[in-house]
Length: 66
Image: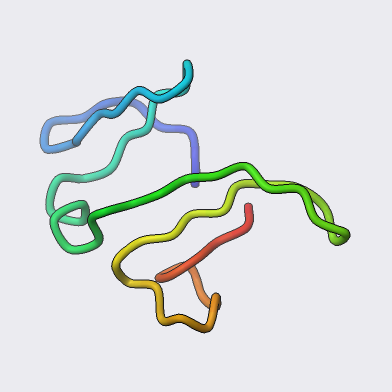
């Protein structure tokens, strides 16, 4: 996850006051995408899961804690 500006070819989503941007081509490959804020013993951050989730919870292709 990173801060960015809306560009041609982006999908824009608004959820609970937060704007999410993803390139349309990438979105077609990974949808549906879910973003949650989680707090664990190791810290807190965003958990991103998508259709690319390998079930192992590893790599930013599946889940990311940022």
